[in-house]
Length: 125
Image (cartoon, rainbow, N blue to C red; front, side, top):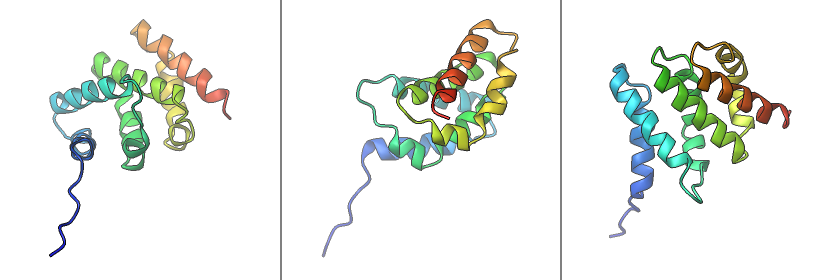
């Protein structure tokens, strides 16, 4: 009997995170955004699986969260992903519209990062 390959622990974690980024409970979504922030800044982290499983549209959606920490984590994650070269999926997810709104966010650190992401995306268009 041939054993089926078990998903890696990272794959299972990405799957759970993707699922919970859509959770109706803001506290759960916040924990997942915290986790994404840790991943994107890990040295040598490869975002391919996160992107392939639909992580980018969920981060773009999180740009509209009421909680400024959640918005800040979402925009920081997108900034780091753009820095890693993941620009097309960010553009394809409609991020520019939301980023342009964040340029006027009441929270200044969000404004600053949103402008930086727009610049990163603009240099690839």
